[in-house]
Amino acid sequence: MTSPRPRPDPSTTPSRPGPGPTPARPSDAADGALFDAIATEHATIYGYGIVSAHSVPEVNYLVSEAMAEHRNLREAAIALLEERGVAVPLPAAGYSLPMEVDTPAEAANLAVTMEQDGATAWRAVVEQATDQTVRAFGVTALTESAVTAARWRRVRGDAAITVAFPGGTE
Image 1 (cartoon, helix red, strand yellow):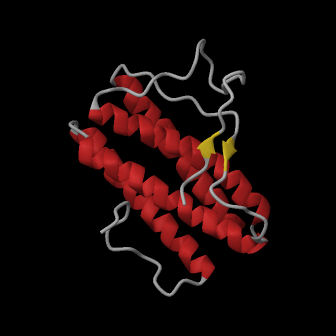
Image 2 (cartoon, helix red, strand yellow; image 1 turned 90 degrees about the vertical axis):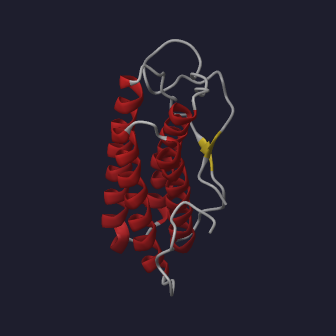
């Protein structure tokens, strides 16, 4: 399962100002990984709106903390990419969810999936970064995604709430 993916609809107006279509993914591996991580953050922020709508009140604190964390990560990553002179991906007007979300349990599953996808995106930033500042930022973002995923696994009642190598398949 993956994080929410953009719905193809080129006629929608992006929520960030600027003319023209969404910028193309950069060909440079380091810039491309950061571009992908920002796109993942856009989708995750959208997805947390769905998680919020279906979560029980007892986990509202976790939803709001995760949303704030991802907004902060996104904005800081946008600044990093803009400092490099690279156009940033725009958020989509809407996203398709990787699963049905109608219950609190399904909302927690979506949250874990989004955090895992975030860890994968940030791990790619760490692996591809050629700039020490970007790499350090990627490590911080990867760690935050892993910790938030563990918190959601605890909500789900998982026996194991952490993984050995967040963002990887090993």
